[in-house]
Image (tube, rainbow, N blue to C red):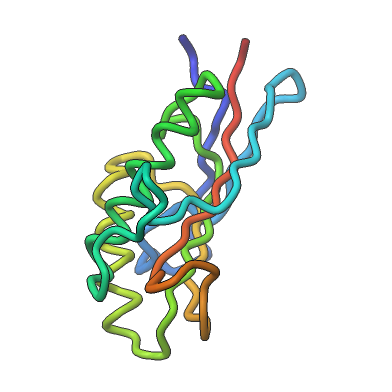
Length: 135
């Protein structure tokens, strides 16, 4: 099935970023807006307490489940926002490296942000995403 997502790059912008700077989907694509994917186990407990990378991995795992329920997968994601409860860049990078590896060659436009607190006890990472599919 052809992808609805087109990643856009510009030679006028730095190539240091590990993602495309923009993306599009055609008018006939079905957009999927995911709630922030949290590092929660099925029983509601927080996974990877104290571990940014482990929580990012659990967020990706949960995101894949939500995408599948909507008829999509990681290659259908058109953008992400990675929220990390830290003011330390190394903590943001620890979460980002997991997210970046999960997406592989599908380097969607992303925003990585430090924040003061997230919604669940011991939560350090949350990942928002939008996807697009052609039905």
